[in-house]
Each structure stands twice: as structure tokens, then as C-alpha cells.
Image 1 (cartoon, one colour):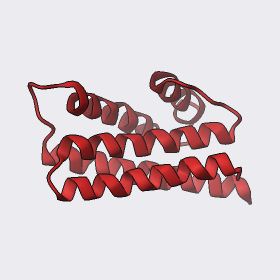
Image 2 (spheres, rainbow, N blue to C red):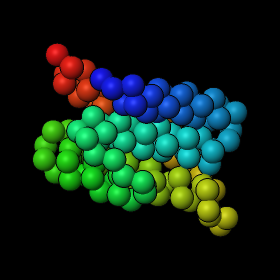
Image 3 (cartoon, rainbow, N blue to C red):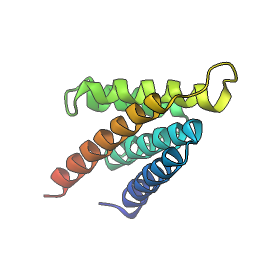
Image 4 (cartoon, rainbow, N blue to C red):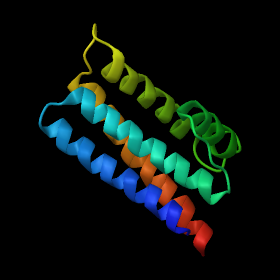
Amino acid sequence: MSPEVEALLQKARDSLQAAELLSREGFHAFAASRAYYGMLYAAQAVLLHEGLSFSSHSAVIAAFGREFAKSGRLDRKLHRYLLDAQDVRNMGDYGIDRPVTAAQVLDVLAWAHEFLTAADRLLSAREV
């Protein structure tokens, strides 16, 4: 695994750990954002491992869907998790009329853990 891919995976792990800390302290919007970024970094890692790199969130998400979910290399629900996490993140970062709830954060955290586990497995299998 390249140093760049490993660095993205470490950022994903760090973001998820930060999300858990923020969630425990009641900072739901910020926790959801960090969990989403953990997923985004993991998506970037698996794409980069394939030689693909994108600069925008939408391009990363679309490429992840095309290369891994649609192709069946990873479970399609992971793409849905990424899309839904982005929606919650946008609500928390930019919305002022609806706060992110504790329940929403717990969902996004669970999705992020599953997403990162799948990315780790995929990359580990590719190294053998």
C-alpha cells in the first residue's frame, strides 16, 4: 500500500475517533461532519489505490459508486451510507433550521465504522 493511501486511511481513522469524542460531548453536528470526512478519506484511499484521484466531494462520491458499489466490488449500501452521511453533514455544517440529532450521529458513526472496515478489508485483500 502506498504511503499516500495509508495516510488517507489514517486520516479516516483519526476523523472517526474525533467524531466519537465530539458525539460523547454532545457536539452532534460536528461529530456527523467528522464521521462523514472519515468516510470520504476512506473512499479517497480505495480510489487512489486504483490510481484514481479527485478533488471534489461529489467526484469522489460518484467515482466510489461507479468503481466499487455499482461494480459489486463493495456492498452498494456503502455508497448509500456515504451519500446519506454527506446529507447529514451538510445539514449540520450549513443548516440552521434543523439540528443534527444524537440518533442521526449514531447512524452516521455506525455507517462510518462499517465503511472504514470495508475499505480496510478491500485494501488488505489487494496486498496479498
